[in-house]
Amino acid sequence: MAIQPDHWIRERALKDKMIEPFVENLTREGVVSYGLSSYGYDARVADEFKIFTNIDSAVVDPKNFTSNSFVDRKTDVCIIPPNSFVLARTVEYFRIPRDTLVICLGKSTYARCGIIVNVTPLEPEWEGHVTLEFSNTTPLPAKIYANEGACQFLFLKGESVCETSYRDRKGKYQGQTGVTLPKVEKQSA
Image (cartoon, helix red, strand yellow):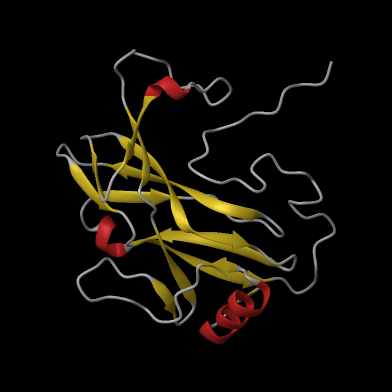
């Protein structure tokens, strides 16, 4: 697998709508940077946040996750409580080519403040808004800025096309919009 350069990302974004909306240049002045970089794309966080709360003393269970563990906010600046986390989504909608796997890394600006961004890989032929998880590892409240850079996506092109894509498998997060909570498929009877 080879990492793809800026011109490949630009061509796929404009021709195949791989990234919408697409920002052709890295925007940096006065903001956490976003847009096309040398070997990646820095995506923005939207203004929709789900802030984790322990008000009901719920147990965090990925097989039976309850939305009442979150407080919803639509805001330009989200405050993450100390030692907690927030779910959000990208501004950009992604459509991943069948021969491509996408890896996400957090922005160093946030990492240097103790804010970690986690996203699992975007598989071949997955599409949707990417759900982002911001963890505040500090004992202090931390800020996330909507419509600014959140993470960088790296595009790895396979040597050949995969046999079975995420779309072929009818993946449970296919076509997601908004901030999407964890899902576990029910067992067949």
